[in-house]
Length: 207
Image (cartoon, rainbow, N blue to C red; front, side):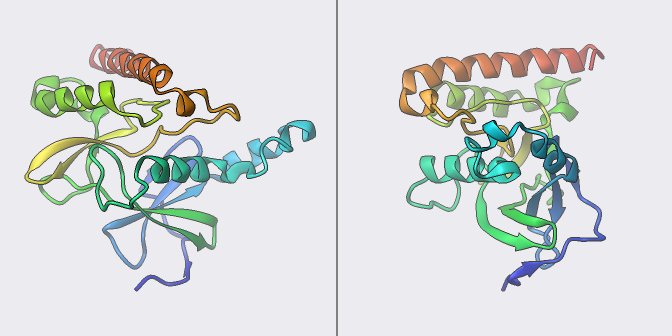
């Protein structure tokens, strides 16, 4: 059973993103908790006052936009969605609101590595990557940042699978991509093309 308040202060984050810190859940190592970075909170405080009225969630919009997208594409709360991380809860922590998600693991039950770790040898992930690309072409999920650190190679259902752990949802107030699937599909292809270029840069030692 999860505690009502998750205590994270004094713990080292397992992963660090631009806007969030990711901690191993203190009560369950199979769960991770995403909380806002102090730097991100400070940055959002610098937004002009007139803009803040259009961003009522403030710094918390990062987690809430992500949660909105998960619920939108998974309205029946299926336990696992192909290529998508799984949200367990939105919970209070001593570092603010935390998005609790299932930790993606590899075949050795270690935390799954980001695709950036495989950029030098893409052949070993080719099958999983081809399956992911085909999914990108068909999905209605809004993808905005598929950088190689937002994707991991997980082990699901007796096979390796590329799983998104960050970089989804539409940030703008006018949700054009959400309302018009044809527009979203075109945008998703562009996002995937950027991912491929990013992997090439890493492979060639340019990142």
